[in-house]
Image (cartoon, rainbow, N blue to C red; front, top):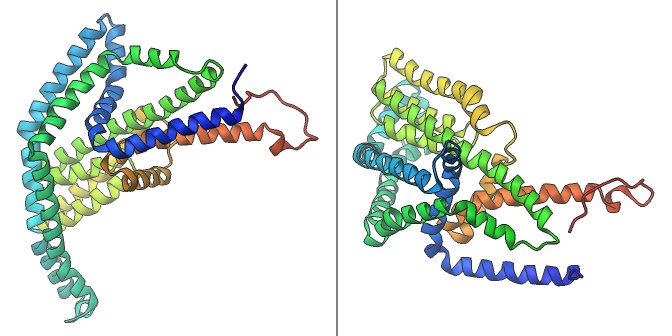
Length: 360
């Protein structure tokens, strides 16, 4: 005999409350484990594919680990120092760029920047603010990552957790499936498959798109001689998961820097603009349809709301779980709407009955 709905809601409500309280107090401790789980989830299809070609799970995990270590060493030796140096230089030169921009406007639009005007005051303070705040943020981040504890968490615990979870991923999924309430197991499996499909499309697909586009932008911008091409490419690739925002922010930043660096050299400025136009063509016609698909189920506004809410409530660890939770809530909401549209509450008592899947 199944438990009454009221008792089920009570027990599940207590379990959810305990989970949230534990998550609230242990959030910082859970960061490396959540990051490790995210990496393992991202790489699980690669391990499955290696298994299909004849490797054991242990060998597949070993191959992925070796490739990941080699990639990390290359990034640590070649890319990260250049990225940090360019970011520091960009912050330090922000006041000069602001002054140059102000002089440019004064020469061509003198009436807009009269002495003491609001626009001129804002532009004057903008560069100093970026330098002051940007430098503080960069120094804080570098100091944080340079601490012994963070080095251990990021460079030891996260890879170890990722390897163990990747090795045992299929067994863990099977164990969780065995613990599902038998009465609700079919519905939970269906929702879990839909959540996994949404996450796979967004996290794996968009993560790959961001990586490819960020690499393309960085290499192409450095190839045409833009001073801060690596930083601009990294920023554009990082925010590509929000449609058009990556190209808009990266393009505006790159073209703005190109105007100062290549003023009068319209060919170089045109090349910088063309890089972002070509990037949008590649993303819209090849990368996103191939890697993400047409129906992801995560609207950009819903994603931004989830990141803001969970980031405010739980800090950095909240931002780590924002995307999975947003995907789960979206799938459950669509399931609830489907159940509602098959119910008497929606159709009315006079509507003919129709086959449906009852809500457990």
